[in-house]
Image 1 (cartoon, rainbow, N blue to C red):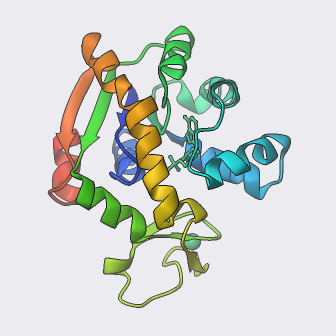
Image 2: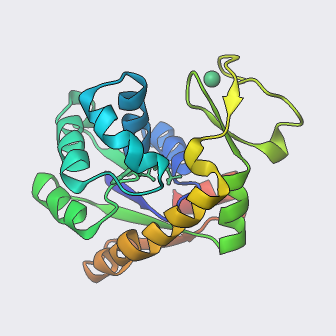
Length: 202
Ligand code: ADP
Ligand code: ZN
């Protein structure tokens, strides 16, 4: 199965894409994680992407399309994949359509308050990228998986979050109608807890 996860920042795409990937035994491909790895590794792509990401803007289409095209050509994608954070614009969706065929688009839905609280409360491990929410950390400041320090992403600070939500509405939300129109969209309410939501997605 070739699957796309759609939804606003903070709705839980990463969490659910990872879980479903483990369940189905196919890779979860997060363009946000890939871009952050490029920034950490100080590659040319990372240098070009950094100021867009820190400002809560999208990285230019041609940059992410090229990156995804290469990733989907790797051997582990042969039996399917889950895209998390791509496509984010109509031109990206059109380019994807020329690269491969998509079987299902999962549209995660939650209200604005839920999304804001998930984003402002999100902490990530500086070393391995694992994500946590402060409500479940009980004051802990290190990663359960690797003991790395937990930090707040620059783009998870409140003024940048508001810009990301605006960018989502303007550039990414039109994908809902696009994929509904070609009969691929499945709406899933993402507010009943991770396990219950995962069952719905399955
Ligand atoms: P979230 O889903 O919480 O917004 P991501 O990790 O998916 O976080 O994305 C972080 C940032 O990376 C985005 O705000 C954007 O700048 C950049 N990015 C990720 N995927 C794409 C994409 N498909 N197109 C353009 N920019 C992207
Ligand atoms: Zn870690």
